[in-house]
Image (cartoon, rainbow, N blue to C red; front, side, top):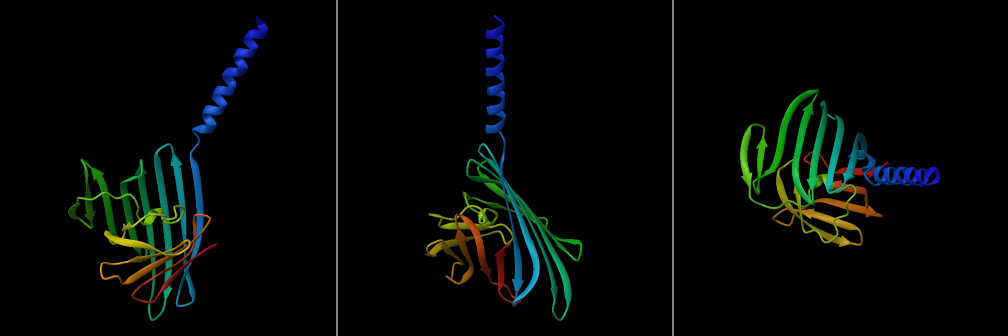
Length: 201
């Protein structure tokens, strides 16, 4: 009897152990240096946590510009996907420490409610890939990408192996992404002040 109880106890411990291991969220982290006109101007950090069918992404971008004028911009972005569908994305932009912009998109009742600095609009579309996913999710077979900061849907096309281009409706190239083993390693982005480069640290 004692031996049977010991075996049962051992079985229960194993079940509890493997259940806790399988339920543990999968976390991916990465950091990138940000360059403009050849100068390092900041850093971007991203954390993606996957738990069952829910994916949480947090992206923090911290940029300090010293040209004819100096200013500091910080983007704090939180995004949630469930079963491959964007559920919520919230981006706060701080300029010199003060809140400068607040954009949030929520999925409810089959459509998206977009609130950008107090202005509300509705997006009747399905969003399965957005800017917050680019870091750990190579856009294989993806044709459209939703840009959370600008609240725009743009096309994304492969340029070569593991290299993708994002362009607008006029086919003007805006971003270019380079991947290694499914992870973003380098990117270039158009900006009014000059091209921005993202380099994985």
